[in-house]
Each structure stands twice: as C-alpha cells, then as structure tokens.
Picture 1 (cartoon, chains in turn cyan, blue):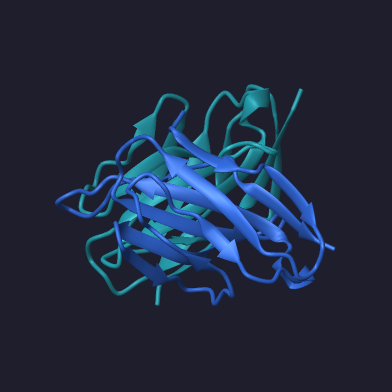
Picture 2 (cartoon, each protein chain N blue to C red):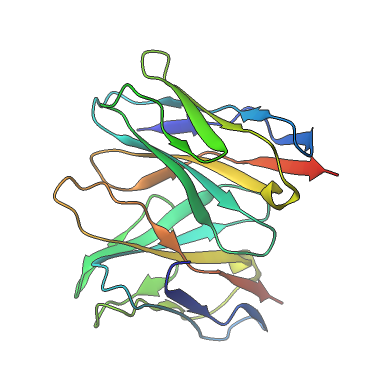
Length: 113
Length: 115
C-alpha cells in the first residue's frame, strides 16, 4: 500500500519570503501522479499543483513549484514570495493505478506579516 | 472554484438520529468520493463511486452508506448517529480520463457534531 509522509506538522514564514514543505512517499508503482492541495481555514480544499511521475521536469504554477525526486520518492513544495493568503493546511497526495488519493497528514503553514 | 456543493455546512444533532449529508456537482463528473477528516488531520477515503449505480467502500471503515442514483448526486447517510461519527466529511469529484489521472475537486465540507 502507498504511504505519504509529511514530516513538518507546522511551519511559519514571513511575508515575501520563501518556504519549502517536505513530502515523501512510498510506492512500488512506476506511473502515478502527485498533488499538493491547499485547505485554508474553514474553506474549500483546492489543488495547488500536480506532477506526473513520468515527467522529469518539475511542475510550476506561478509562485508554487515542486522539487520532484523520483528515485528518492520525494516531492517538496516551494512557495516563493509568500503571501498572507497562503496561510493554510497543505496536503501532499499520491494517486496511482487504483485512482484513489492517499493523503499525508498535512503541514499547517502560517504566513506572518 | 469547482462547482461541487455540500449541505449542510454544519450540523449538530443528537445520538441515534438518521442523518443524510448531501453532495452535488454540476460538472458532469463520473467519479465521486467521500472523505472523513478529523480536525488538523489527513483525509481518509470512506466511499467512492465511478458512475451511476456504482458504489464502493474506501480504505477507512465507516458505518455510513452512500447511493449514486444520478450522476450529479452522491448523498451519504448515517442510519443512527453516534458521537464517534463527529468529524468533517468532504465530498469530491473528478472527471473520467483515459489515463485515469484527473485531479479531484472538493466541496466545502460538512462539519458534523453528534452530542
């Protein structure tokens, strides 16, 4: 069974600085997707970024980028120029052949003014 | 924002009551999911459906049941609520794809509290 581990329960960053959230996973599959989801307090879970395992190029979405290391089974999220609106729980998730999402326990990120 | 709606947003109810949590999506997605999430914790899949009349249990055992009579509607029912059912319930949907990998879109969730 796949597992997803987020080793940082909580993190904080100053506004405009850069922060990196860690995620590792375990799988025997070769083709899969990895996701970062953002869940603001009392608000809807939304997709931040997606990475296809067969693509070597790291995905980027504006201020959000990932560092995908397939051999190391590592999938970290970098947020540049942090904004107050980035304050949220961030979940790393794995989707393999079963098409079901497996989530990590989440990292609570606080952006301080 | 995705067009997936959950009602009610909050529900406080006594033990033993029958509860139905509603989830509807207007995107025509074939796949729908229910997750259970305790405060500050990860999501656990409790039910999923890949189309009308298709329902499956997820990885986390749950006493709830679901039905999928229409594509857009995926309600979750608890026949007799207990305090252990207190949690947040998130509904999600995704589009069918030939490669099977499409991101899931989530509703706002229902925060359920059983007294």
